[in-house]
Image (cartoon, rainbow, N blue to C red; front, side, top):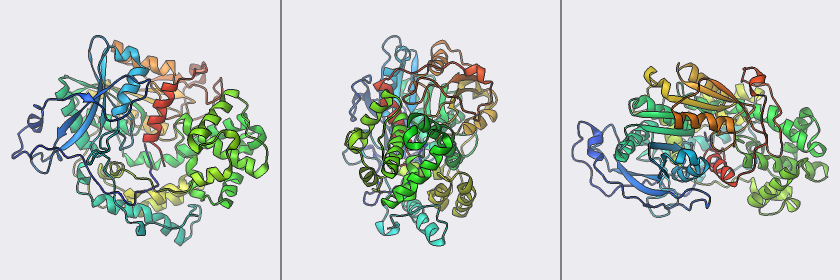
Length: 568
């Protein structure tokens, strides 16, 4: 799941438009009109990872509006395919999340990570409507974005949501108001929804000649997969929902829960880890590390970094790269405040921090300074895709800006990391357009097809969200990953328990019941340090956990999913 703070200021909205003429009259079954097209597979536009399996790509023509397919100009959706290396038994459509993530590169990454699955399944990726073509640069191939006049945005660089003055609140609300108004003015916005994308998925199943569509979705992809299964239960095959929203409830509730999950990860997992790895700089206890974190926050503010921009570094740290970057920000700030050197207790972690410093800040760790970090943390107003807002704000009725202001007042004192800021930043609070379709919940007959995987301390889709969905859909299975702090479990954490359970389902048609897997160690550590949390099963069931050997491919895939679901 992605919460976006920055906005685009100069780009205009665009969507891939098919060259075919508008259908004169809608068929009784809208799929009949579009199911006769032939997929022309060829090279993909994106540059694949050297370690990924080679994918081929094709475009699919879809109606602008599946409810009225004879109105408007057709659109195109880009898909990728990694063919099964041995006997083909089906396809697995994948989605990395967002909303708005381009998914065509994911097929090759997952196929390479899970070769036993890739022997018998085609991995299919998809760039959902509104996201353009991954790697595409030609007109119509780039994601749709919102054109927001710069004059609508705050010019202040010192915003801190802890400041509850009327002026601070008004300044914070300028961006989400402008985003909502600009995004609603784009002509295709009403047609960039989960309901429409689920129908695109059903057409893809038909064009691939498959009787059922197996599915693997991460983050928002769990919402998409559950809604596809709810709309087309007879077409759904094995459905794996990893790092789950409450797809039986409200999509926006996943965003509203961010302050809870992010504070929990910071206080209960990240700061204790930092105290183990950097005791000389941040303190040797979690309480001491917490005080250092606050002191460093004030220090960065004195260096020109807003409180909001410091806080967001520690929000949504769902993968090892973002985790290590947060460690750099904290330890370099502590070094600037107290003196000393950044030296991790683990030599492996020290090497990882050096690599992160080079990749993110362009210098080795020994040359990294607070000034370089402060310059990188300044708002840069990167382009933000329309799809995030069109989906999140159009799938279901939204709450009001007054609701989100009250939420900020309520969450801020309890969850100061993100509780103050989130409620002042949600564009859906200013959304006025009503949903055009109603999304159904999972029907009972489909529950036996669904497997949910959820980490205990996932900062982006909280454990309670997955738990609530499973409780509201009897028959769905939940695999809880004890003490896991990251977002995305299957194939990318190197967890043999998780990967084994999913692969037994995919390869042997044996779906596990409700189960508990141990987590894997945090960066630089060789054991799991148990933390009390929402997983209430006996600790002994998940006592064993081993260090995970490094894997560049897993890191690349985790980083790919992490960026799709980033809060920045």
